[in-house]
Length: 115
Length: 113
Image (cartoon, rainbow over all chains, first blue to last red; front, side):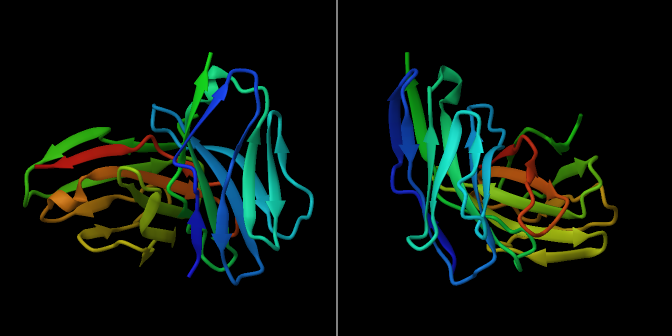
């Protein structure tokens, strides 16, 4: 069974510093995709970054980047130059090619940003 | 840009009552989903649809029903509400079932008392 594990229930970072959120997953599929979603207090789920498993290059979106270690089944999110608006729940999610887009989520990491 | 719209945003139900959570999207997406989010947990899939007239069960379908008569709408029906259905419900849509970005509604917070 596919599972997604986020081992850090809460993290804290100082404004302008860098923080890394961890995610591991378990799958026997070869065709899959990984995502990080942000959920601020408004409850809205917002896509932060997306990674295709077949791509070796790590995805980057402005201050957000991932460290995708396929053999280790690890998919961590690095947030650089943290801002107060980055404070939110962050969910790691996985979907495989034959699953009709059904996302499997981790339990989330609550990120606090200190001014 | 409306995207995915859910109504209502909040609702309190008594045990045994029924209700329908509405979801509509204006992006012409074939794929639509219903998830529930319990405190301290990630989202879990209730039902999904790959197009009008086609629906299928997800991980936690018991106590729910869905229909998909049009591409735009994907309502979720709760019959005989139970306290275990207290949760936040999210509707989502995607243009593809293969790794495409899912767009989410703002969620419905449902409390069953």
